[in-house]
Length: 331
Ligand SMILES: Nc1nc2c(ncn2[C@@H]2O[C@H](COP(=O)(O)OP(=O)(O)OP(=O)(O)O)[C@@H](O)[C@H]2O)c(=O)[nH]1
Image (cartoon, rainbow, N blue to C red):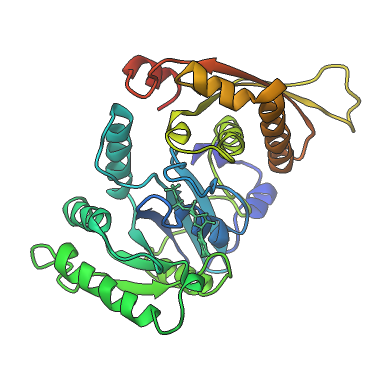
């Protein structure tokens, strides 16, 4: 990692922890249907908000890495969008991205909500995993706080069966899932068990990132995600899929005293239609104002600096289907 190379041994020691022979480090990725709880679990494991969460499906478009630091290990989480049957160009690009990601990680965590019956979506994902991944797959039965004690065993059995039926491939994975772990990220139950189980599947390796590093996403991408998360609040139907955010400019305000910095952030919320633009802006600009103040808070927390956020709403027609526009929006 040349970015972290240093010739000063004192600062090298502060960047990397002492590590013994048993130190493990590697990559894990969560897959699962939209809303399966991947982002929430990522945040619970990392212990800080890095991936956006929302009750709307498919809000995670970017590959966001959260880094779990433990005394003897480092687990780099690659949070991907859900694998799903592609319907648009964006959809198929997302699937390609997921498959590329999965072939590079050490273990895949398949998130299945405890409170939802296993459906065709889960079977589709399981069959994809059998095809693309030669890595162990751990089933993470999420949201266990939403079901009673009597319902959980039934779901665990169903999950086990899904693994045996759809994951078994050419002798490998004949046993299905490498492990099945029930977890509630919201109540913090079994989160450490998930961490330990995933870490046990990491190769022996020196740390991959400096201590304290939680994510390697560029700040602008995280800022764009925070704005998109704010814009997704209270919107319904197809609108969530029509929103993209780009950060145009991020500059420290000149003439500010050193102890009172201010960051100017200029960003654009892209929608597909005029009607959607009107929804985002709201009556007399009220929604846009609310989006701005929510996002501003999140950005301030992330960067530790007060921000002035300048938001524009722009109709970028059919951005989901237009390859050129997709590239410009960073997909
Ligand atoms: N009760 C409960 N709700 C949860 C838990 N984990 C996630 N949720 C909720 O489930 C919804 C979806 O969670 P996310 O973490 O955004 O799901 P995701 O799989 O990342 O979703 P996409 O980004 O759409 O793929 C949110 O409303 C979460 O608050 C849990 O352990 N318990």
